[in-house]
Amino acid sequence: MSDQAPSSGNGEDKFLVVSNIEVIYDHVILVLKGVSLEVPEGGVVALLGANGAGKTTTLKAISNLLRAERGEVTKGSIRFKGESIAKRSPNDLVQRGIVQVMEGRHCFEHLTVEDNLLTGAYTRKDGREAIQSDLDLVYSYFTRLKERRKSQAGYTSGGEQQMLSVGRALMARPSVILLDEPSMGLAPQLVEEIFEIVKRLNENEGVTFLLAEQNTNVALRYAKYGYILETGRVVMDGDAKTLSENEDVKEFYLGISGERRKSFREIKHYRRRKRWLA
Amino acid sequence: MSGEALFFLEVVISGLMAGVMYALVALGFVLIFKASGVLNFAQGVLALFAALALYDFIAPGGWVDDLFGFTFPIWAGIILTVGVMIIVAWLIERLVLQHLVQQEPIILFMSTIGLAYILEGVGDMLFGSDVKPLDIGIPQGASDWLLDNYGLYVEKLEVFAALTAAILVIVLAVFFQKTRIGRALRAVADDHQAALSVGVSLRTIWVIVWSVAGMVALVAGIMWGSKSGIQFSLSLIALKALPVLILGGFTSVPGAIIGGLIIGVGEKVAEVYLGPYVGGAIENWFAYVLALVFLFFRPQGLFGERIIERV
Ligand SMILES: Nc1ncnc2c1ncn2[C@@H]1O[C@H](COP(=O)(O)OP(=O)(O)O)[C@@H](O)[C@H]1O
Ligand SMILES: [Mg+2]
Image (cartoon, rainbow over all chains, first blue to last red):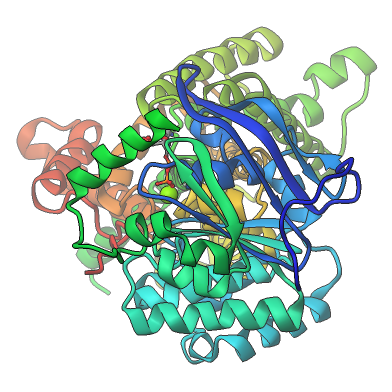
């Protein structure tokens, strides 16, 4: 894939397009202030930003898990394969091929690993055999899960739970997975392992990924395109390569600086001043 | 067997039968609580309502008889009543739960108290409040076989009730463990958000779980109605279900059953053997005292779901 920058056009034939959305929680808390982004079919797009920037909210706006949190998209539009999906139920969206893997894994703790996976196929109507063959497919990507298929999910390790939640999403045969902070709380080696699997799923199974990450370093190595979110706004976007070479990104998100590393407070101050001047 | 032992056995068995009733009502509680976190105060009234509906489909002098001059056969009456309970579940979701989804548990609990009164009122209005004998052909009287061979006096109805309850529990267990919907119900019980994220519609699940609770209530209503007639006191066994739940744990199906049996047997045995020393009526408060003791020593109940904690 050469160029994944948002192309202009009427947006009819595009895969997933979020245009200028505003999200309000509890009718008063304005969290997203006009976020736009685009995910091409077959792409891996990273949504970056610090804690509280609005990454989860953006993903939940797309999957419409927002409503269960008293959140609401009050402006803008979300289109998937040319159709507006802002008012669709999560159940409907899963059937259309959009599945979110929530931050903090959210496995069904008292269900076995295999029952967790089968729950992922809840909305499917293509029969037992198709589901069984996808189960085998998931086990072929996550061999550890196969070993632990009969264990209660609550007793598996953090890494296994992260794999389980991705595997469970796969069981719905999604065309796009919204993956929220897969690296959270995992050892670097495991993070790498999970991102490798994401890459293979993308290349071999054609699954599109929109992933929210605070771990900018890893995310930019695996994604092709990235958006950086700050307090509910996209402040920068570009090819993963371009972003990782950008001086500001290096300084604020990759922790690499030409001079000495700045303290968090200085960075914040600097950033504020910079935005003021911009 | 000596006369003493035989008598003790009879006491235990009659306690077990009362326990089956408590267990059935508690089971309805647990199902709804697990799936929606709602403590359903109306479970007892649901049993009353189901029994009344059944009565009116099949009994001479019931509604259908009055209006159309015929009665349904028992099997058809049961199917129709199941239909009524599904409609009731659907209405409850539509009119009540759907609007309170995001509210505090206490608000949902209070809404079920309101629901209990509405159901009771509607039941009263539609079906009248006099005691109605429910006869669906369950054998009555003592089991001759047990009496002849072992000298044991046990009501056939009670044996029938116990067997039916056992079958019901097995059917439910298979439903929960082996079916797609059953799995989704367990998933919802574990994590609402995650269930939503894989495309489970909570509203559908709630209608299903209230329907299932309605059917369990129907079985309880049939048993109780066959034994003592359909009457208001049926809705009061919901109050006995509370100590059962404290004993068995609010989220455990086996807990509801075993808790129900323990309380049923416990209060009968206490009544017969301790009653004379304290002036009787132990049956009325035994369950609550036992529950209180449990609250002190094992607040999660006998089978309360273990909270999985990881580091
Ligand atoms: N359910 C909610 N109700 C109110 N505010 C919320 C809710 N969820 C998130 N927020 C707020 O929205 C902002 C963005 O949160 P979030 O989308 O979770 O950010 P991120 O995923 O980037 O860490 C935060 O300030 C957070 O406090
Ligand atoms: Mg987040």
